[in-house]
Image 1 (cartoon, rainbow, N blue to C red):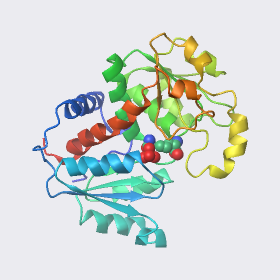
Image 2 (image 1 turned 30 degrees about the vertical axis):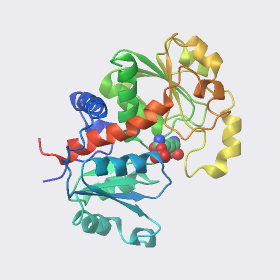
Image 3 (image 1 turned 30 degrees about the horizontal axis):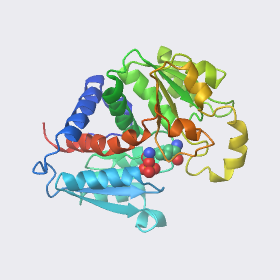
Length: 300
Ligand code: CP
Ligand code: NVA
């Protein structure tokens, strides 16, 4: 039987997504050091890209649950020397209980999952970042309650985070207003599949109007560093600043998956201001990851 993977938010149902959010909140508020459901279990974490939050949240989460996490950089394993993904997936999954991958190509994770005998988690690809959305949605629910029917504004690059926001809008039934410059729009197929959950706007201010949550991300993602200058020029009118927050609802929140560049995609005033919940969002990666590991690895 194929194991249950978590590669996209579309891999989970609405009730499973809601269940993960509620469980993450419960695990956060009632930490019990004696609860070690993953005692003796091992998570392999394969990183082709840098990470602070994803690595630490999975590693700390496994430790809290009595298990262990292995940090494997693709540079130091045979993966980096060209061992086929299929062979690597068979071998690694024969030795561990779960595998998390952070890769450039999305297909690396899907191919790996096809050949893995244990659950595979997408820890970010160029296309999607579903783990971050578990934490983001938990954070919204904690601060404002249910997100169903609310309006979220995505300002900036139509990147991996934007795609996962589109998926979250579909699964949790909220509206996503997107403002991205020409040439940096999200993937058409992903956006079209979301139907009326997604609406495009020509300016950041138009997308932010009456929003309940404003979200952005870096202008140049990992792997796009050499495009930084050209991207800064293309995105100059897409900064989330107090002018943008002013047209959203009075109680609107600001989120960013981090790391952030103050003065680029977000002004320091907004990033460090009263509507920003970015550090609660970052902490929730830990609780959300624990809920996910329990969901995938503990027999119901
Ligand atoms: N938000 C996020 O995934 O952070 P890291 O790149 O530090 O893991
Ligand atoms: N879009 C960013 C997210 C980092 C967590 C990147 O891919 O670099």
